[in-house]
Figure 1 (cartoon, rainbow over the protein chains, first blue to last red):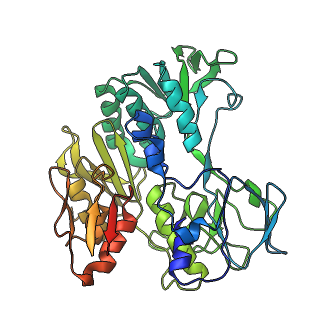
Figure 2 (figure 1 turned 90 degrees about the vertical axis):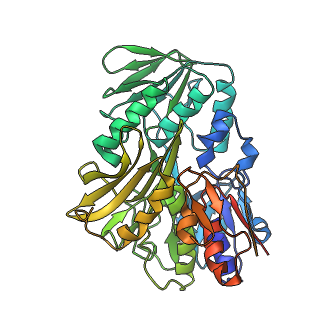
Length: 376
Length: 63
């Protein structure tokens, strides 16, 4: 949607078609695991403001199933072939499922408004809930369920939540956050199977024990939606491979943005794919400008994400891995009100805040300037 | 131009503060304060950038 907006605002006056697989007017996903699931927002509050000029160019409820780069057409699920001069690929990512459980009653992934409606309706019945995965989606779902007064067990295969993304110190703080709010958090244990027949009754863990559950939410990550591009000739590698200008490798006048795009970030000197809202918005707008030949610099954002869990706001700027150097630089870890810095080879690469939203943005320019980490 | 914030949507992400600190400030209490709800026209670019960057679509810029 951001790409479409940007195309029009940049003065593109040719024919524009926006194709969306979901039969829904465009909406925002972040509230689905937060306010909408907790019941404090009506689902319609997630609708995006859509420029009327874009709205009349929407083709909803039909997926793209193939890309023909010879004919330069997109093939749709209903057989229609849509010719194009320029193409923005923003097909996003789809949740991983537990194989064999996709049609089991009471088992949910949470990506779409439809998923959310179904899950919320089940939660209204007061079930025991099991959440598989303590990532952002899983943790927010757990928090929303606790806000509804439901019993929740979260099962996480790693030793701490978000361990690979944010490291052990933040991981421990996240674990404490769950437990302090009455969530039963099981760490370092995998799921063997879901038991129950046509409707789930329990989660069988890898150690043979079981967690009784009427509703299971699977939050074990997403996979970029590139199946439709497999025969196209575009380079694919956990996403559509793009250069630093978000141009797809293997075609002219094709760009990609958002969860589906793996582009080369010249500031971090690595190819990356970002699954967060801010990137989808920024990269969508950038990719449109790049497509029109209006981009004056490569795409080198400081990525941002946030997660609202229980009474806590987690915010992150930049890049981090569990092996980066880590230091709390403001506030108090014990009070769960702090800012922490992440470093790599003495370079400041990331900053995280728990409950200090007034302090986190000051770090953005320092990350962009590749400040020294040990200078903190 | 007038800046309007829907405080039911605002989640204090503070991205607006990063874009237009002359207009938006998230304070130690965790709340967003609008420093000037009728900012001068030379801040239009920054204010519109703040509206676009807000992850919860809480900011509207009225002419």
